[in-house]
Image (cartoon, rainbow, N blue to C red; front, side, top):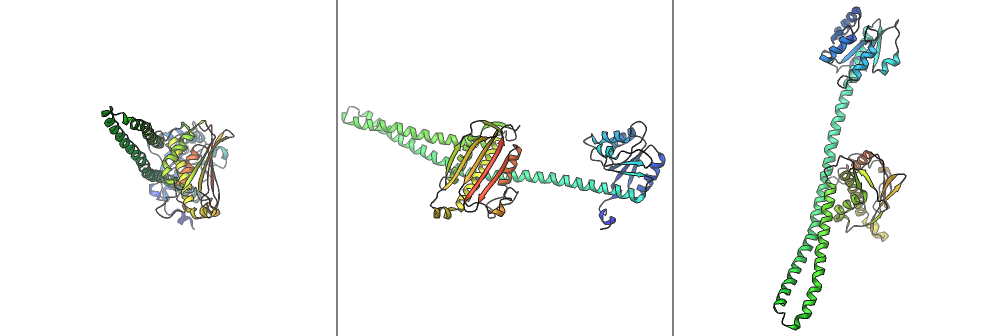
Length: 408
C-alpha cells in the first residue's frame, strides 16, 4: 500500500498545524512546506504565545521547538498535557542536529515524535500526516468505545427487564396461591363464626356443648393458616424490595444469605417442581456489595442451573436421581466464597471458555440473550472478585465466586 493510499481519507484543508519557534526563518520554511501540502498553518514565536493561541482555537497538531527563551518546549508540552481539554493534541518536537536534545525527556512530557533541522519536506509531511491519522483513528476508537458502552448499558437494562418479566410472572403465580389460601381460610373462619353465632343463640340447649368445643378447636388452626399465607406474601415482597432497591450503584453492607433467599423466593415457581435446593450457609458476616446487582447475579446463575436440570430430565430419570442445586457460602482467606452446584446437563468442554462472552448462548432463539453470565462476570469484577466454572457434560456444573471482604 502506498503512502498516498494510507492518507487518502485525511482532509488536509480542515487540519490546522500550529508551529512554535522563536526563529522566524524556521517558521517561514516549515509554514511554507505545510501550506504547500494543504495544511492550515498558524505560528507562535514563544511558549507563552503558543498557550494563548491554543486557548483561543485548538489546533489539530503542534510542531514545538525545544530551545526557546523563557518557557522552553518541554515546559510548554507539560502544560498542554496537564489540561484535559488540550491533552489529546499531538505534539511533535523540533530540534537541530547541533542542539542538545533529550529524546527520553521529550516523550516523558507527552511528545509523540520529533523532527530535526534542516527540514526535509517528505519527512515532515509523513510524520505530521501519520500522527494526524493516528489521532483520527484514536478519536474514532474512543467514539466506538463510548457507543459500545451505551449499547452495553441498554442491553444490560434489557436483560434486567427480561428478568423482571420472568420474575413478575412467577410472583403473580406465587402471590396468587397464598392470597387464595388466605381467602379460603377467611371464608372458613366466617363459616365457623356464623355457626358459632347460631349456637350462641341456642346456648340454652346443653346438647350443643360438644359442637362449640369443636368449633373453638378449628379457629386457631384457621388463623395459623392465614398468618402463614401472610408471612409468605411478606417474604415475596421483601425479596422484591431487595431486588429493586434504589441504591443499586452504591456499595451497601448486606447479608449475603438474605440476598440468596430473595433470589430463591423470586425463582421458586421455576424450580419447585424441578429441583430441590440444598442450602449450606456457613457465612454470617455482612459484606459490601451492590444488593440489587448481586441478587441479579444469583438469579441468573440459579436460572441457568434450573434450565440445565430441565435439559437433563431424562438422564436424571435413568440415574434414578432428582434435580438438585446446592448453594454453599463460607469464608476462605479473608474472602466470601459462594458455590452453586447442580446436577444438570453440564457444559461442553469447548464451550466453557465462551460462557462469559456477551451474546454467547446455547439456548434457542427467543429463549436467551446470552447476556446473563456476561452480566454476572461484570458485577463480580466490580466487586474485585473472581468467578470460575467447573463442568462435565451430563454430570452437572459448579460455579465458584470469590469476593474479598475488603473490597472498597
